[in-house]
Image (cartoon, rainbow, N blue to C red; front, side):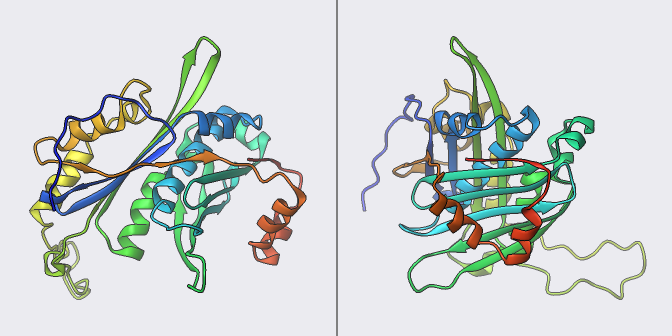
Length: 302
């Protein structure tokens, strides 16, 4: 198979998922750039700024993870916690449709420090994957302990998927002639070598080791060490920069190793505001969770 080489495109394209591979480092990933779609989604409802940022992060993360599904699949990210933002819900209907909802306590939110990591508090985050057709649904759950969505995603892959993974999320608001516009971005990089033996792990924690002795650690594969170090240099402003193309950003990170980009998938904010849509969403929750949603808190959906 012939691989065509070309210069990284400088054309900025928003509201896409851009898959890529760095084959020399056995690494694959996806880059999400959200512009008008996230701006439209957030402005449909009058979220406080701190809630908007958290919703945008959740949408970027859901797009990164849900974009691996094929046609007609569905990915859902949901949090339930004891912080000022008691619930987040993001639906990703493959290949491109996004919706989001946040439930929060306005009084507690006003007393909070405003730091995004503090708004969720303690609870859990669940990823539900419905591939569609006759395939079974799958759900993974990870504890929220005040660490924020990015760190929670890392813990999910480390504990549940056991795939070496690095996640970056960023949200920002730019000033234009027409006013402020929200932007969001995300990057996921995963180490997926063809030879499974390259992913060595310690079998058991040495529970009988004397106190104070460091547990035995298996060194990371050199390829993943380099890939992770390169991806970790990604700055938040690069993920939301309206003048920087996705291809240029990936070239900055991996130019010396060669990066192959694939066809992007467009993203769109799609609202299910009909009674049928709301009913379908509520039926996706267990009855006890639907009951918990009834209360005096503020909420907004999109």
